[in-house]
Length: 532
Ligand SMILES: *[C@@H]1O[C@H](CO)[C@@H](O)[C@H](O)[C@H]1NC(C)=O
Ligand SMILES: *[C@@H]1O[C@H](CO)[C@@H](O)[C@H](O)[C@H]1NC(C)=O
Ligand SMILES: *[C@@H]1O[C@H](CO)[C@@H](O)[C@H](O)[C@H]1NC(C)=O
Image (spheres, rainbow, N blue to C red):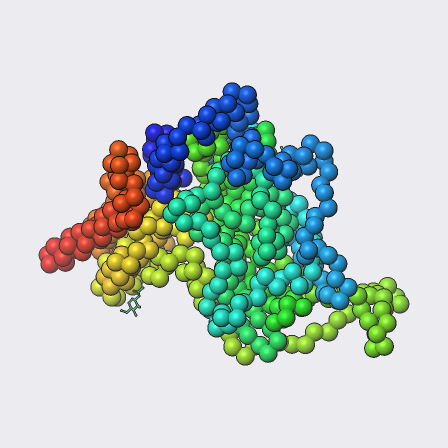
């Protein structure tokens, strides 16, 4: 079965969920009888592999029929004509305010990609063309209506500081699995997706406000409240499709977009808006691209560093039309041609929480495993020493707590399950690190103890993810590789097909049980050490 092989080959495919989905899919095709298979075969005959691939990428509802809506992106590409957008939100509003937003963008640093090490050997030039070509935002400046930002306002039952709600709820679950890699054009955004799609379109024409993988969606919480204003903190998981037919899809997934908006409670006025991709970690973008006309099996994965991707308001929103005290429209420029200066009252916040706290709440909403705190590497060891606990450490090639690749499987299954959360909280200090960060700590010999810790960790590391249990002095007492972990916890396909329902009902049981056993074994071994 292709997915099992791909599963071992690449980080994306090592996703248990993905495997599970393949199994479900094969079961459902078998159950469905021959009819879909018959049409698919006919389509393959008339279009060929690559033609069918392109057709499927447009056929978003998989009914083997292209509706005018589905054909639209290709029509626009061939004719060069984009029909006037009919979003209600774009209607002019003479009584409303407008907000100017500027985009700042520095392209991905190609040398940070792992595959740059051999000069992108064996990677076809066209695969990376969309990436190399993306050197500037498509719209460096945009003017938006203030009331479009209404989407950021809290629902009535979420008026407490730091109580998160979903602007765009996730639609992924275990039964829907993940969304297809074989897509080029984002579906038309609806409702609250429209403003987020619009903002992200300033960077690139093809933003997908719903990521292919969980955690999907956009979440927000109130960071500060005044009589008339809110500061809303938000976190968005979205990605871009950089290629177009006839090239194969290339997905560009920043770790996250975060930021804040200061807006009036009736959303008529936006005081400040900022959105950005955090750039503090050494790697912050996951990239996945297909190199053949088959979903999943022909996929390359890499990660890299994006120095800057930001949107910022140039000032508060201002009325589109200005009236004098008699209600007459006046020019927005004074007689000397200078724009009229507006004076804005100062906002006095009555309640607020620090940015870090708001960001933490959003993070936990996206990743329930974060109910246990994950400390930075060296801090975890200091804390473990003070509290006489073990260190539970996850060492990965990509980041664990954003949309970059390798942590997905762990996050979505074991690390969120309640027996694991309880045991980690009681007996361990948790931490996760990027291999790259520990390599830096290892060579930077400023603190011998820290370098030694990094040494001991890296000694045990195998691609893509290693789970490690250590004594506070860094001695590794137990470790397990994620691929090995998945191998021993995933059932054989034969077993699964016969018991597919019971398997889905107890989905996270085998892995939770195995992880629990791993942690307990660590505690057991530690006893022996500490007695000597
Ligand atoms: C590269 O970008 C330019 C303008 O930004 C665009 O016209 C062109 O089609 C792009 N080429 C590719 C291969 O994406
Ligand atoms: C962790 O333990 C502390 C104190 O024992 C408790 O207050 C907290 O709720 C626990 N958190 C979780 C996620 O179990
Ligand atoms: C850490 O402590 C244990 C138990 O005291 C000891 O056996 C081990 O050698 C120590 N490791 C290092 C790296 O000092």
